[in-house]
Image 1 (cartoon, rainbow, N blue to C red):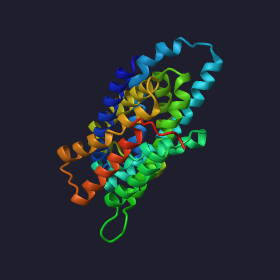
Image 2 (image 1 turned 60 degrees about the vertical axis):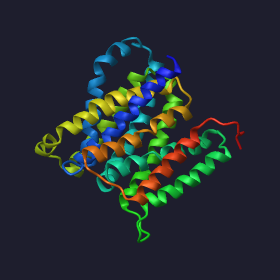
Image 3 (image 1 turned 180 degrees about the horizontal axis):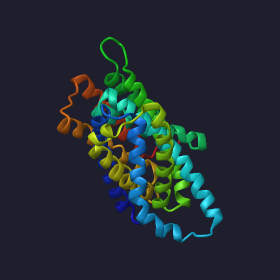
Image 4 (image 1 turned 30 degrees about the vertical axis):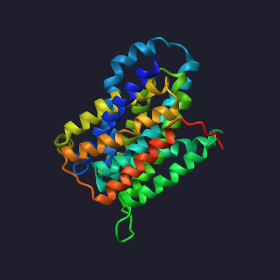
Length: 291
């Protein structure tokens, strides 16, 4: 696949993810985070099943392949379940638009955490990280110098998503994207479903009340978008891929404003713009040597 086509896949991914913030915000009043994510991930796995069956058939009897695939799927499943549950809690408090912008901070965390695997970080990346922190202050800190619990939760979510992106870059090349996506949602959905019953006691009525956001998040955000992410990242440099994926924050803000009628103060808009500018600047190729 050409890099340009991979970029289009990731652009579509960012749009679907951005709109999913609206679905999360709408669902937060009716069902808990584990319930929402458990059901949507299992829906995502179910949607992928017809495509996964022939792919799995190609590796029938290959124990080494399946051992590696299950290990990779388990790693991604734990990460995506953790990140999604934390994100749902944060969006319920801070809203879809703000949630999208804060989550986009993962684009700063990705190169920083990559240092754990021996990568070097340039001066420009550190500068962009500092600028993003200033933007985060303007976006999250109120006039009373307090930060909402939802904002802190969303920052933790960004950290978890950063590790998920790094993990895909390391394990995604060894397993077909559709199969890996299926396994991560099967495992992630099972984890959330086991926890949701004793912790949240979901009722059929509450789930039916928000069936369309859950269906959208399951079929499109999980089944389609995350699969496109895994496939697209195979054909692009991680820095370029993450840059395109960060556009989900723009779609989230647009979706929150148009569909939910959310609004942001001038201070918050300036902070969000600074965060997004820092995110973009951190990923623009330059001649500066790594440091």
